[in-house]
Image 1 (tube, rainbow, N blue to C red):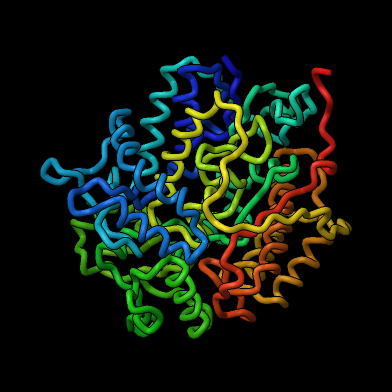
Image 2: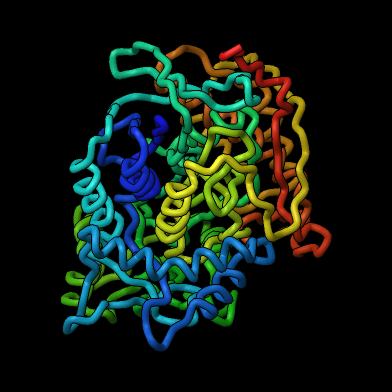
Amino acid sequence: MARVVVVGTGIAGLITAYRASRHHDVVLVTKAELAESNTKYAQGGIAAALFPDDSAASHIADTMRAGAGLCDPIAVEVLCTEGPQRVRELMELGVEFDRINGELARGHEAAHSARRVIHAGGDATGLAIEVALLRAVKTLAVEVHEHTFMRDLVVAETPTGRRVVGIEAVDAAGTSREIPADIVVLASGGAGQLYAHTTNPTVTTGDGVAAAWRAGAVLADVEFYQFHPTSLAVPGNPLVSEAVRGDGAVLLDQNGRRFMFDVHPDGELAPRDVVARGIAAQMAKQGGAPVLLDATALGAEYLETRFPGITRVTREHGFDWATEPIPVTPAAHYWMGGIRTDVDGRTSIPGLFAVGEATCTGVHGANRLASNSLLESLVFAWRASDALDIDAEPAAAGRPSSLAFVTSLPVGETTPVDRGELQSLMWSLVGLERSLDSLRAAREQLTAWRVDGDSVDAGEVRNLLDLARIIVHAALVREESRGAHDRLDFPLTREEFEYSLEWQVPVAATEPATVGA
């Protein structure tokens, strides 16, 4: 029986902990409260081919199309063929998806060719899943460490070779200690806090990805950060679900004119990257003012029932979206890149698995299809929990890739930086639109910055700074526009870049300890 340390308590971490506890001693670590994660903020739903008029093949085709040529077809097939059964098993764990006359209610979202997105609590799907999984995990003998921040991975030279043997953590009292493990599973989420405007909660600082990077794990597709087209244009940028547009809401300019059909034949239901850039371009035309989302045609009763959370939030900010359009703007939402894994969660370092948004499985390519994120976490966490007993090399990917060793990124570290400065720089220079000039300016400033102190906040900012540097590095290398990566100086998609960029720190630079000799 192995000791498995799972870092993160969203859907990916909780599924892994729940299923791994059948055969292993599981330690669940979270830097906040057990219930705080990106999962509980997920509104739209979970996509799966559950209905007679749909098919896994159709879901595969939609996912591949949205990914702009960079999806891994092996991973996409796993996602879409195994997804329906995994969703049914979520229901068995107590997740109550919304129903109409006893049948699952299903919505339509951008770039899906069928109505296959199911939801819970109207627009509280993530919360419903989180609550059910927490209930299930609490019935098990799982050791839980709340308010415990993972500072780094512990990597060692063992008799069988170099592997991860635990994590270095700091608790709420500021006490540092190592938590030993036979296997570490990183389920620590994305890094939305890189940006000044994000739909993500404050805990999303990319801790697992940054720690894996420093330990020598391969990262992939880091240049692709998805900006959700519609967040409410108020401080905190609350998400306004894709499903609202799927149900018929439209985007208007300041003069009340629909503009998205000028951008794409699918209008408001074009892929997310297209809609986000269309909104940004329209905002630029009107001096930076937000565009408007008009859902009034859906009616007050429908909005209250189908989108109770959004209705509540809009009211809290003084809007009545049943009678007036609401101001919206793009915001950082989801990272397609992350720790490179195979379809069983294996990373390039023995003893280290990763699941959820912290990973790059290849299912999203350059742009994630709406409501595939919860499904990815569910499907691949399920598979990873079954693979923990199998000591094997990661399986080969099903798409072309190029691995480069990053011996050193230019670092001067002369000026202290705080989180707000970093977020503002990333938003203005490495956001929806990039160019050689903006990326070089970002690199110069990131090179000069350093993070002082040993607090948890300093650790989070240090992680964000590490990730910002490698994102800028990758964005400079990808001299094209593809999916969520938009280069103003290279506006076309180029066939010679139809491969995944992978990055790794050479093993010699990570200086592992030696144990078991």
